[in-house]
Amino acid sequence: KNEVEQSPQNLTAQEGEFITINCSYSVGISALHWLQQHPGGGIVSLFMLSSGKKKHGRLIATINIQEKHSSLHITASHPRDSAVYICAVDNNNDMRFGAGTRLTVKP
Amino acid sequence: NAGVTQTPKFQVLKTGQSMTLQCAQDMNHEYMSWYRQDPGMGLRLIHYSVGAGITDQGEVPNGYNVSRSTTEDFPLRLLSAAPSQTSVYFCATSWGAEQYFGPGTRLTVT
Image (cartoon, rainbow over all chains, first blue to last red; front, top):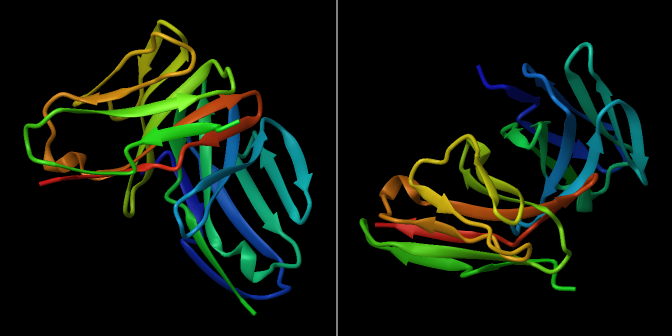
């Protein structure tokens, strides 16, 4: 079993829909990261969380340390949100990654 | 600021050849790391460094060497390339909550 599991693997949505991507992990962590990888391959850091909730624009990330679970939400999704979203857990500099969720938002 | 730069962008090697993937940053970040990304497997940590002179192994270190003589540079060496090392390699730095990734190097070993 992978240490970091993401669901769903693939997600197709219509523009404007509310999106949720889930991440569960089985190891102790010092922080959790959400990353975005665009079709060209570039990787951008979206959030780092160690507790609670963070919001940036239309993106919201939450983490429940007791349940070892995090969610990434996108409100009012747009075609430019189409990308692979990657969850990563940081165990004192030892990073482990989920396989990613491929999101396609159709106009 | 150039951020994180990686060279080369593409490389083809024959089995047994050696090469160095270069990574440089101009942000004065202490933490630097190397990852490989393979289809269906996601990113995997190869080696990381928390500062000049300090390196440590990640999840998949075999077949790779690193050194960190300066804050700016963190090269990744393949001493004897194998087809299993065909992958896309990313270098990254981090400072606090922010991570910065390089554009990647696509390596093919034949």
